[in-house]
Image (cartoon, rainbow, N blue to C red; front, side, top):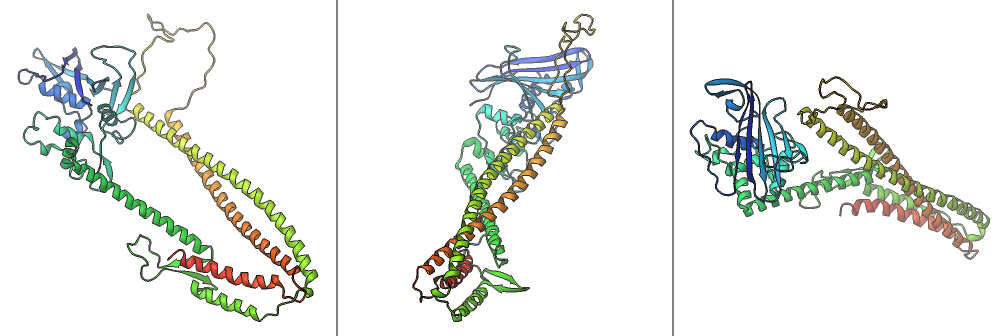
Length: 498
């Protein structure tokens, strides 16, 4: 969409009253003809200043305007001090019209821009929606209250992401684009390329701007580079997740991982080969050594005498009854714990939602404070509670008004929301820790239940076997101990690293 300038109004308040100029613009070529030192450059710079693009001229935050609108105004050989000055600009994008006001000198901060949603200059109307924006402040190009963001959206521009010299990714600021669209009158005609603002620290700024204006493929390539860098960061983040998970698994058997790279590698496995080391009686043994020791220890079980069924019938019945009763209790505990974990997760989700809401509320209060500090919120003078003639206090109601409690200030709101965020973050941390403990407990209990079921099955098999047959439960216990130990240790070594 185009940016059409429809009307300019420059107003200066002096000790001798108000002075200024209004220039209506028409579609097509517009030529402003006047004598030297009559204010042509001042009007053009006022347009630039009203659009919040004075940053293209340099890092200074002082208005790039002559003393006639900032200090002294000469009229009929008399010099008057400038008390207040401001510029109004009515612009259109071909369908919508807005009016922009920015103060040059006065009580209102010059980083504030007033915007009316309508042609306030050519068709004044008090019903136009009014909003304040900030310019040349942090976030003015990205945040909702930023005027540069508003102007880019108003023009239908989708600004690309570019790189700074420090590696940070930022939007291509509008101050870097307009040197190709707006020629500054004093120095701009000498060399257009030298007028790009370098203090914004954007790499190859002239190339990036020309690529954006001409819609060249180079910008698409630069965007792909940015996406590849983002993918690289994602791969590194995923790798860190894997590192943490492997460390967690190693810690579950009182071990740790040696020679495990903290950054992703292009080839695998690296040298020296990563391995899990277990702390055992103040000694460090590899997981392979632990497996060998387990196999040797379990091998000794082969020499134990295996009892026959008729020798242990009564003992087996007692063990079976005990195990079945124990399984019932564990299954009840698992059910209750599973329901408790579900409620815990719902509670954590609710806390996360509350934290997000509070952070949004905090940002809104900070934005409101920024606007308030820039004196963007002005109190309109009304006759409420005041005689319009003598200005003495009068009551507007025949009924005694109720005492209304005073609301909190913006700073008090900010402090209150910050405390709320701290409180809910502490709750989130506590609830998450409790959830992890419950999930760990559930896993342990579920594993115990599976073991008990296997023992019950083995005991029942023993009771139904021939009287002279060896105890199935005893043999099953030996076999399970060997297999489970080897599987648990070997799975950590091979499944995680092969």
